[in-house]
Image 1: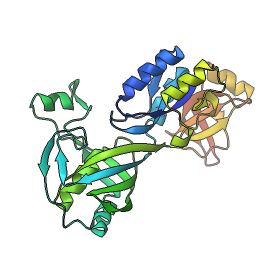
Image 2 (image 1 turned 90 degrees about the vertical axis):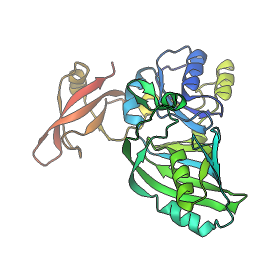
Image 3 (image 1 turned 60 degrees about the vertical axis):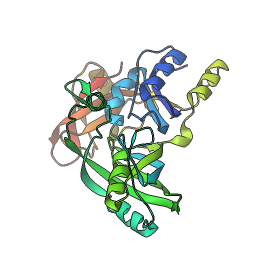
Image 4 (image 1 turned 180 degrees about the vertical axis):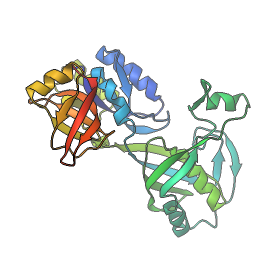
Length: 303
């Protein structure tokens, strides 16, 4: 079994993203495993794990846009903004209309400021927000920019619930969108269920549950289901092929002159050798003229 690459996991409800990483470590006998974007315990769906030397690429993959499906329940507000929280308010929903819900959902699309929920794992001074909230202490309301690419209903309103599809930037709190939507409609709402369908170029259809992965390991299935080879990891920037002389310089951390690049100063580049093996990730430190000639400094070198 290869130990460097990505493992696409279909996370089940009831466990944290950290739980998934810990079990994957035991199953694979690897310590160096990370993940590219947390899912709440009640949420299910795609969790991208980075293994071995691919953990050094987590910083480039974690910011990929996400796609979700889920269900919003109207008329009931909870302190955590989802179904696991304590009900803090209930309101009649008799005046709800599908067209009004859809119009307000569409209005969320675009760039906006969003504050993390009080009951979240975001930290301040090393303390998680939910720890402050449980102690009855004030929780900071600092916000950050997010982008909602798509937020629309799927199907019709029924039993005070509506299913939805959401495309958004990394770090978006979906339960906050559900909570805010309920506030705008005047009846309150919470996120009843959530399933992640995509992370950047990766699709849930490619993923397997940890039980399925464990069974494949036991039967010595190769390649492992949900596995993405290290050299085949798609990164969100330009890929450039290097010759043998350039490769020799790169593995020693020296700058190289690259021709035919569309990148500009400050951009990242994926550097591969003549065998299409990923040898480094570098950044453009200088542009020479306007003909696509750039100087690249290796930043992360894979020997």
